[in-house]
Image 1 (tube, rainbow, N blue to C red):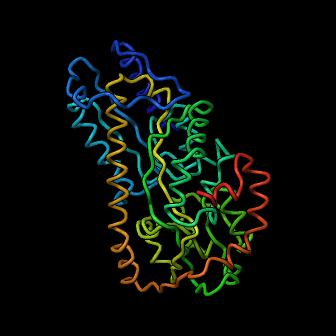
Image 2: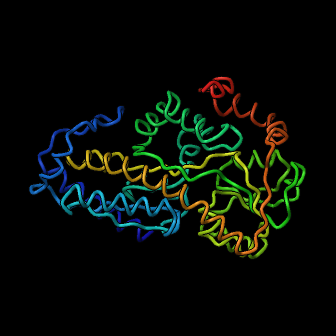
Image 3: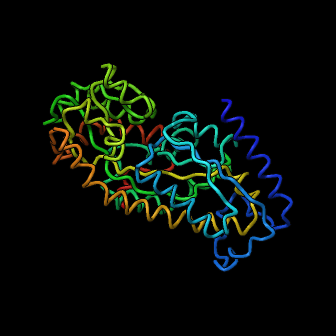
Length: 350
């Protein structure tokens, strides 16, 4: 809390400086800002204030996500002539995903790079973006994300929760780690599995028969080591950076959910910046997320090799249909009660 309060004071000072810079008015929060300003405007920053953006993330240094944040900072430095700097709090040092999302909304931090849990927290009617077994693959997920449903979710985040969604980077498919092999859907019932702090993940894996325990990511390794849980799920960057290969014997490869990292900024902080800085931020995010997504795809083979070298045995969930059949009653309930903005048929049509 002390760290968050210090960040809040720093952010307030930044906003005060930016407010006096004489730039044009910020875009209304009901619409995404116009990023069409020519990039040449970024060179003229002599009269603009120095700004430090405080960025929180639950992820570890060395992941493609944090390398993407580093790239974002590098690009901002270049575009602003060194006027914009980042101060990054990684590894969940400011709290778990839920705490970071709430702190971001309140302006206690300026920006965060986390998963999709904030969608379930703030816009639950769009929480199908945070649910396994909804999308066929990466392309399907991104088609819905970039379509009308994704646009509506981002608008609701902005209008009602003071959160501007800067962009997303792909993290890859999520897989299951365990101490026993998963050869059929019935084997899921043997698992006491760590899930994200998401009711959707808990309800879905519960429908498959698992005992689900929500645990913040920084506590995952210790929870497996101490036997609080005997399984987890997540993309390769999460499995390797948290060294789960030291406490898990099996990884079951699957495509039940394509994982992303959502980058958001406190909208009041963003709108209080000079227009030139907002343009630089939007341009830098687009470049950095593309870079980080490509880097993550390149790193996946290396991360898998690390797990193999550590002695982990790989299984493969080749047929998702038995899993889809088992979770269908839960999914039908989700669409009826949690996701009134869409239908299974609408999402399948993308």
